[in-house]
Amino acid sequence: MTNKILILGGQGRIGASVARDLAAHHSDCKITITGRSRNLKQLPDLNFFEFLALDLDDINTLQKAIADFDLVIHCAGPFDYRDGRVLEFCITNKVNYIDVSDRPGFYQKAVKYRDKAKTAGVTAILSTGVFPGISNCMARLGVEKMDKASKIHLSYLVAGSGGAGVTVMRTTFLGLRSPFEVWMDGKWQKVLPYSAREVVKFPSPYGKLGVYWFEVAETYTLAKTFDVDTVVTKFGSVPDFYNYLTWFTAKFLPARLIQTNEGIESLSKISYQMTQFTDRFSGLGIAIKAEVTGTKAGKEIKHCSNFVHENTAIAAGCGTGSVAQLLLDGKLNKPGVWAIEQILPSDLFEAAMKSRGIEIKSEVIKR
Image (tube, rainbow, N blue to C red; front, top):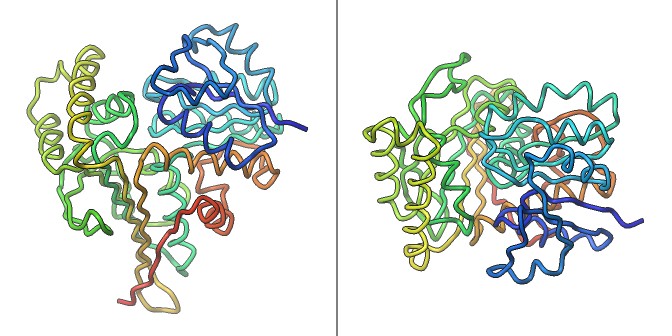
C-alpha cells in the first residue's frame, strides 16, 4: 500500500531536501509538499511532487488536509513562532508526525501531548534534522559506550548559509534574544547566547575554529533523556568573521533590532544576502563533533564522534528522511511524543546513515 506523506514547508530548502531523500530511499510513497503558493522557479525538480497550497494559520483547511495523509513532516519554521496545533491535529486524525523543530520552547509545548498521542496510537518524533537530529543520535552513541556518562559536549560548524534559506538566519537571530538555561554541573544555569568562545578541532576541511554557546532543542532534551551532569551545545560559522559579527550582534546591537520581528527580518535578509556572496568561497557544509565523557569499568574515558557533510540542508534531509523511512517501515512504531534520541536505536541510526553514504567516525580515548 502506498504511503501518503505531507511535508509542511516542503518548498523550503530543508523541506525540499527531506522530500528528495524520501523519494530516493522509499519508493512506496506519494509525497505532497505545501506552501502558501506554488513557487518552484529555483527548485524545478520539486515539480515531481504533488503540491498543496496551504497556510498554517488557516485552521480548518490545515486540519482537513492532515486527515488525508499517513504521515505529516513539519518543516515550516522558525519553530519559535509555532505552537502544537499541527501535532494536535495529527493526534486527532491518528496520523503519525515528524518535525525538524530546533527550539526547546517548542519541545516543551509538544511533549505535553505525549499521553494523548499514546492513547491515539500516534508516533510523534521531534527534532529529526541534522542539529538537532543527527547530533542527538551521535550523543546517544557515546552515552551507550559508558557505564556512566557525565558530560555531553556538542560542537557544530556551518559554512555560510549551509544551503538553507533565510528561515535559518531568522532562527539564528531569534536565538540571540535573551540568556537561556543549560544543564551544567547537575543544575540549570543561565548563559549568554554566543558567549564563551571555545576553539574546537573539526575534521578536514575545517580544522580549528571557534564555537559559542547557542540554544538548540538538544540543550534541553539530552539533559532530560540521559543521566548526565552537563550538556554543552556550541555553534560556529565559516568564515570565522561571521562569528565575530554574530557575537557583536548579541552583545552590542540595540535591543529593538533583535527583540522585534521587524528587526529580526531585516537582520536575516541582510545576513542571507551576505552568505550568497561568501558561499562560493566557504562552501555549504557542516561538521559536528560529539564528545561524551564518562566511566567504563571504573576508568574515565571519552567517546568522540565526528560527522561532516558538504551541504547542511541535504544533511538535514538525510536525518529527517531516514527517520521517516524507518517509521513508514514499522521500525519506529512507539506511540507517544519523543525527542529523536529517545526513540531511535543506535544500530538503526548507523545503518540509515550508511545507506546514505554518511560515515560517523568514532574513537574512544582513555583518560
